[in-house]
Image (cartoon, rainbow, N blue to C red):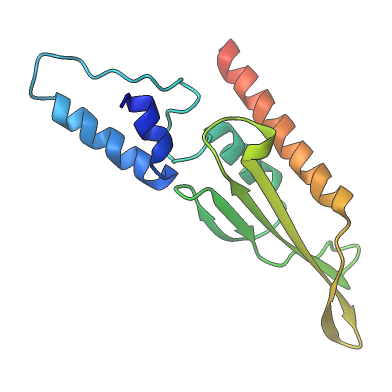
Length: 150
């Protein structure tokens, strides 16, 4: 089995560990370690670095509840726009692949509105989630273009 096939069969969290072990194993011999993975897949965080950075930059307006670069998950805490304090949102971004592709990104949003002093679940328009995905993907592509031209 080629290294690329092995890499695709291993969960993203274990890819970095297996790559490090492979490099360590190759240190004793005269052979240089090689990789068949495209450079867009090789990174130290376990997911596509451009998508990861674009997600963090896009969500920079909201407080982060958690960010797991190995698993590719970013979750915000509740965010209320100061101009509309009776509505708040919580966002979760999941990066599912090491490739920069539209289907490698999943955005989930939860929205609440204040009614009679209590927060009540409210629907999120699908267009809102789609627009956020588009923003992240566009930013990730711009980051990649900028990195390639440098």
